[in-house]
Image (cartoon, rainbow, N blue to C red; front, side, top):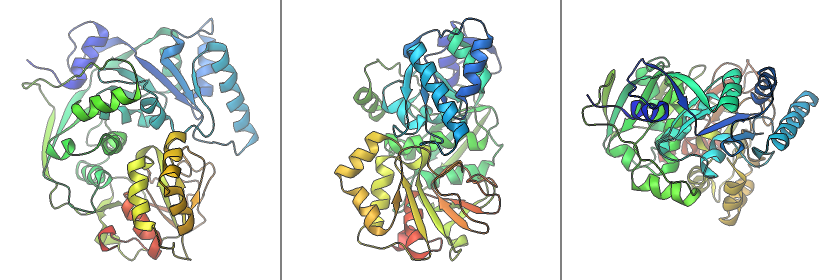
Length: 416
């Protein structure tokens, strides 16, 4: 009987034939923490005995959620992370370097076939490059840093066969929002989502990251894709380690399989206050918005910025609206500057902020006021997500956000 991608990777890392629902102890290829979780992990590591990590080259900590620090207490945490990184000799990314889920693959820390944990729920992002990557809690992060291994329950797999050609004005963000709306927020709980098909094959690696990033929003443990020539080329351009391409077997067993044809898909919007509350953009047209956000670990990459800049170039943001742009890394921001995109945003009236998570988690950088509506390229719109439980957050593609800030209402980017 054949194996899924998840079963193959976990089998390789535990040194045994692992199948869905088995419990395994598997060797880790990379471990990551960010400033919302690393403090607890550092403390827990100290409680485990000698504060020493298994391999400094396989561990990174990133300051991205509250960067630069908005509060004295956060500054104390950042200092703790800096001191720990120096002490242990691990990879460390400070304020302005960018979002953890951009930096880990961008800096070549992950390749196809890897097993990766991160103390952040959107660690599933790296599944786009054929790695089994998943979020864990701070204590599990500490255990991973200490032992270089962690226990896993091998997930069952949910295969998404996605065919057809995405229409003009419709992007990978629209696709993943549609899928989440279809299967619901708990439709793939603790499953390995496998995204395959001609529509996936046609996407760039950057666009694929968007889909895997939001696998957690349907409850999935990870969001996996095959490693095709695009993947291998992208990985080789960003790192030196050899990939271990891991494809599912033709006779692999899946707990669920769904087929889609996306040829007629329209731009999608997730309405407050759940990610699976999804509808076509036409159903929320005319909803007034006061703020737009382009960025985050979901849609702050070069492709996203280019799409938004193409819409905003030569135009002005509506006077009743504002736009915050947060590039996902320092490298992305520099490239956007070279291409003139930052000038396009600023001339349109946007505020461009430090590379990092920006307004997404609501600790700083654009907390909305009571009753305000925000349209964002982020991955979550829970009540209070952006720092104010009295605000309303809609999720959409960079194109839809850019089109909407021009009119101060949710707008179809195909009309621009």
